[in-house]
Length: 265
Image (tube, rainbow, N blue to C red; front, side, top):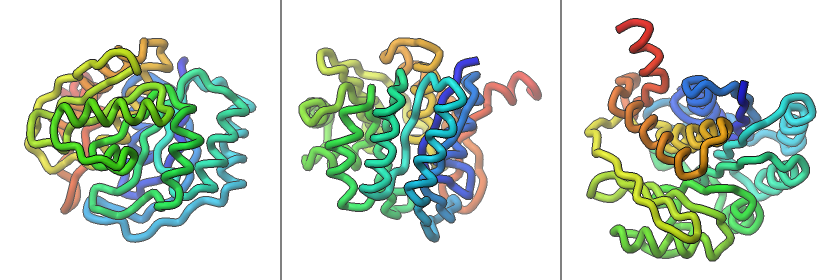
C-alpha cells in the first residue's frame, strides 16, 4: 500500500489540519501517518488557542516514521514558528522523500494567524525551494509575493514571482476571486488552468488542507504532478458540493462522500 505523511497542526473540530489530511489520505486509498506540529483548540467558528509542539518532539516524530516506514509522499501544513520550519526542513533534507507538497498555512478560516510573521521569510528561504509544489491561496500568495492579486493576470504574475523566489512549481488557488474558482498550476515552463465551479456553501472549512493532501496522495500513487493536481481538484470539488452542515460556522467538507455513497445510497 502506498503511504503519505502529513506534517501539520491538529484541529480539534476535525475539519482541517491533521484530521482533514488523514481523512483525505484514507479516502484516496493511501495509508496515512502524521507528525503534529501544533495543537489548536478550534471548531467551525473560531480558533480559541494554539500550543506549538516542542521542536525535539517534532523531530522525533519525523524520525520515528521515516526510520521504520517507507514514505511515498509528504504533505506539510501548519508550521507556526521559524524553529519549527527549520526543524522540518532539516529532517526532510536528511530523509529525502520522493514527493513534498507544501501548503503555506498562514491564517485560519476565521482569521486567526497560524504562521508567525518572522517565520514567513524562513519558510520562503528554506522549505519552499525544497517542495515539489506549493499550494497557496490568493491571500497567502499576496503575502509571499508582496503584490496584490485581483485577476487572472495577477495570478500568473504571482506564480512567476514564486518560481523566481525558489518554488519548483505552484498551484495558486483562485477561490478568493469573484469569478469561478479556477486554480492556476505553473511548473516554471507552462501555465495550466484547473477549472472549477462555484459551489454556494459556507461549509468550506479545511478545503486547502484537503486539496494539498489529495495532491500528495496522488503523487504517492505515482501520478504526474499535473494529473495529481487535476485529480485533487475533482476530489475537493465533490467534497465541497456534498459538504457537511456541522457546527455554527464554516462546516467541514465531506471527505468520504464517494465511500458513503457506495455503502449507503
